[in-house]
Length: 603
Image (cartoon, rainbow, N blue to C red; front, side, top):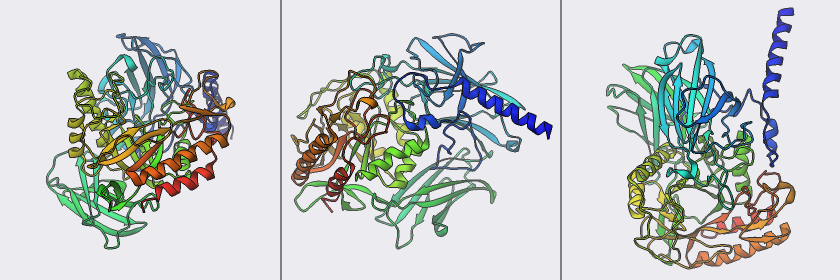
């Protein structure tokens, strides 16, 4: 009894010590979720639901850190603790310091591999780290990665020791002093440009896998022939291995298929197949098994949806966006995915879901994910809740060279060989890691003219690499006759100043109605919107005025629209919600009514 009491007191002391050592920094606004963070249990949810195993270890939490000049050796001592996975510049990291291109950020922590993992390979996963990452385990270099938005992993088994192990991570991030994709991060934030996000900003985790294992899944539905194709990538090219896919509706097995010799598994779905849509986001569960010599060696869980994105002319000759071979006006907000306390990283999974659920509550059926890639769980939430996603490529290199309102040939940025290679590498990685999510309906390689180059070539490559989605070549950018859409931007009200009879014509950005709520702003004096009002009613009235204008333009030729934006972001105050998510700024029920009307106008 005394031993148990002593143990309890020691644990309580250690937990109290950890809490005492960490707290959010800075005086800026924060979300309510920030107050609920437990440093012992940060973002505890399984980070990759599209390919799930039961056994894993979360490495989020307090790590040691130091910021040192570029090119220094592995540090012998550290400055303090940082809460992973929040960027070093964020409040929730507990640090709140700018890194800059002349410094490197070092992380260090200890971990112990569970004894039950003996005989398995151990993978070290990073959801995302911005930007260049080097990793050591027990002073053994295990890997390097460049790119700020995509997951990566390394087999660290040969570097592991019995008992305690040391993990060290080094990150360099030049932000806007480099050519790499970075989205809206700049070293001197202001206007539409925001605070840098450097270092680890998504979950870090360990996963035990068999010697022969499933590495990746690529799921492609075809509702026209009622077939689901699943490509299974394994770590060994053993042609004698068999893969099997079972498809479930709830707990009932409804279809299955198998293959050998590395062939995709082709599954004929039930005759009365259930289609996925925003109104009915039905997901089939999947179980994928790998057999070697007829023995089960690995198994993962996944899910899939039967749905189709396409375009087709309507009876008036207007090219319309279609979902499941039916015209659908896609309408949703510009969603930048920024948080006042976590920057790129939502403070909790509940917070991550909140923005998506509110988008549904507002009556929208689509989100344009603006020049950012979210953690895997965000896309799964969109799949489950029923939201179509237009996925932007985060911009980088030179910004902007914009000559809008007519077709301009030959006005593109000329990138260096290195810059172009980095864009292509990361764009391919983004498509690869997001391919199997049913919610993603459109790829957007460029926003406006930000870093826009070789538009026709990039659009064509994207379409060939993933013919199952639509391609919006340059949202509001310098326009070229390529891809599936002509995308116009106009602020504040909607305007159709160009029309393309061969592609869908869409309004990729409009609105930006500003409303300052003084207790919920990032800075006291620099706030702006494209147009500003003093009350929620006035702002809502303006929104409804634009909605009526948009309805009329739909019949003239618009096939989709994106309203700016989901939330305020830093000094932008044109959100439907405040940056801290504490206030819905416009009158929700009035918005919902008109938004539903717009989403259903072509049905």
